[in-house]
Image (cartoon, rainbow, N blue to C red; front, side, top):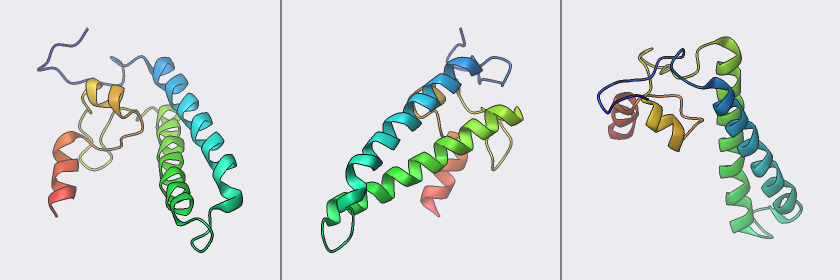
Length: 108
């Protein structure tokens, strides 16, 4: 197990666990889309529309994370190349940035 001061490398991560987690997340989001899409237009149900937009974004991020697993780059920040802390991946398995890069993005 990693200590608080350590960061994960792709060899430290249980990639199969994260692959299953991401696939389950994708399946859950697909169910949400199937339920909402018939009424998800701005004029009919604006809340359903915004929910589908946000859900589609997470689905895209999830698919990209699965691609990173396949490419062997999962767990590495796409901006700086540094390792993403395992605890961050456990909370947000489709994240593509480390905490430092995400903080810089949000403050820009």
